Picture 1 (tube, rainbow, N blue to C red):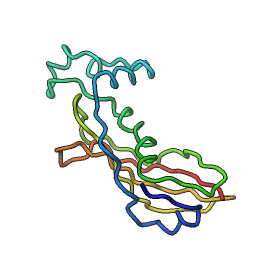
Picture 2: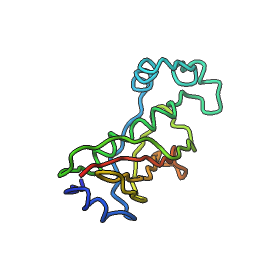
Picture 3: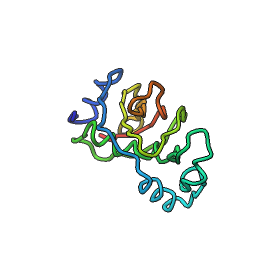
Picture 4: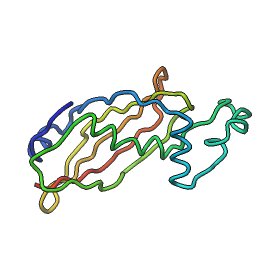
Length: 150
């Protein structure tokens, strides 16, 4: 894991790959838990009998389930210290490119794309690429914004 000491040290990493997380196994139980938490019970996600008649033949994870793994993966990739506050500022762009089938394994790589100064700190744009093990095309590519305050 990359350890970054302070906002200035993170600023120095703009334009660099920060790392790649470990693999995460996507199970039906995790998909169901996400569906229950968000009350999104679309059949393609939670009904294996229904999903058997789709092009994939099995249930698929919610796109937002995949995206919601971003913070977990970022915590695996790097840790920050020496700052007052960190805030999830949102996303500039999110694209769901490939379905994540139940039983798949996903991981995320993080690239620190840019930094913009704000009062008391900086907003950092991190390109998050969610890969599916054994697939060429990623599940999701997202530009997250995280604000760190000195």
